Image (cartoon, rainbow, N blue to C red; front, side):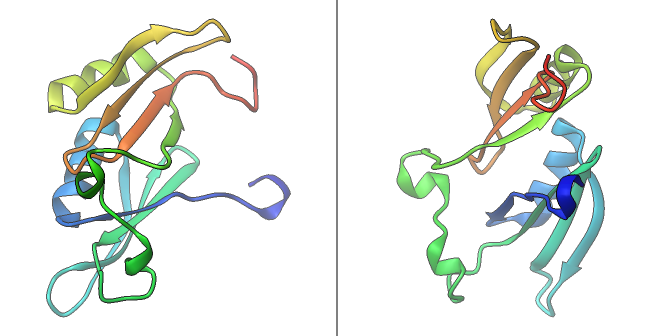
Length: 139
């Protein structure tokens, strides 16, 4: 953690359990923690990828935070942001994501600025970018 701070994207899913399974199988995340409420909804989950992490939970429109979040399918599949994940072997990552059924938005390509990358959507429409370009190290 550089300077004692880090940024962790947080996402909401209607079927958070299915999303966790997909993110692990297709994109290589690993479950670090999953906390459920009494109904079995995911209150909070932490998935890791290398030294990075995302947090996610079930959609909860009845909370103040939940009223600030909208799902991609509610706005024509658009996103206002995208998580970027640096991967070691981008080509292999791309092939795994395709094989598991990720919707590829931008095919794998070598980038002019260094490295390679692609973008994909998960089953609930969230947009992800994966690439070998590491802005901390250059390409």
